[in-house]
Image (cartoon, rainbow, N blue to C red):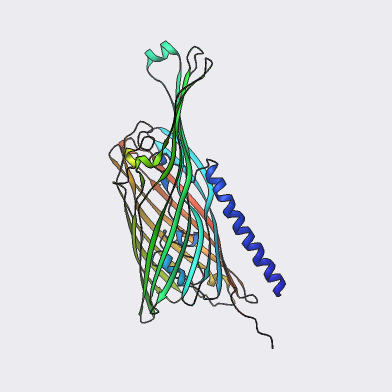
Length: 445
């Protein structure tokens, strides 16, 4: 590839990145959610696990991960684990199929959405920077039922109740990391949240003599915070131990909320309530999060990691905001979310030139999550297993080392006891991580 062709490829790549970045807020404002689960009724919805397809295949671990060929935006301190001349890109999509059961009721849903888009480049010597975007939370649910009281049905006819929620929050972030004294890496990251959420409920009468009622809440929210991270590498003979930690500051959300109630039907349509309020007055926001992890690796042959995170939502005000807590007739209350994740990666021989499958990275992991809310006093748990591979795509002539990562997540959230919804799911994430040497001077002999 000559210089002109290489410049064209780089220009096209940057154009694609900025185009996707421009489309992201449009999708966030379109009302399309980043999740589909009945447990997204509360608060800002279902908080989505972070990480690229590469890290999600290892149970979602990454706070103590250092890999020079993969962007790790889970810890800004990990940005320095890279080739000092490389420009890196990661882009991935996620898809999930879900089955729900509550007593004798069964239903299903599926969803495809952006998982992340991140670029990283060096700054100076042992420092690097990243820019990216990813969904933070998603709202996606729908319920319907009919009145069963014979006196009510006999008097007004059939009555149908329904409720639905769409939307979510996205995050745009910029971070930088630096390595000090060869083993200690520090990082900091700025995060901006934004998005729209809609929660609507309707009551419909089949008899023409009665008007129905449509009510709900429309949130237009934003906020910002910061994340700090560190990693420390310690050689242990032929092995390397990495300890990592991050802390994300809690933040209040601001914006507006529309609280409306309409009378609809064959009779005169009337606005019963239409209030637009300043959401900042509710002083509700997102919780801070502390994550710590440890990994052990043997060169580029294998790596194992265990992470733990905790996020206390009890003082965020989520369970006191109208429209966040009093939805679906159930009682929600905020609690402390916790998560334990573990993963393992194995590469038979990364330098094998004869057998391609020996250069493939094979990964597996597991996780146990405690959700950030209680439903009617019941704690909600989720657990699952993850599997995945990274297929190397190399071109020695251009010094590019790219990889196509595929991950699968099989798990369950909730249970059948306590009138809860049992959610079983299988999710897939496909991502491309591109690695190219850009920042070098050509020499002519």
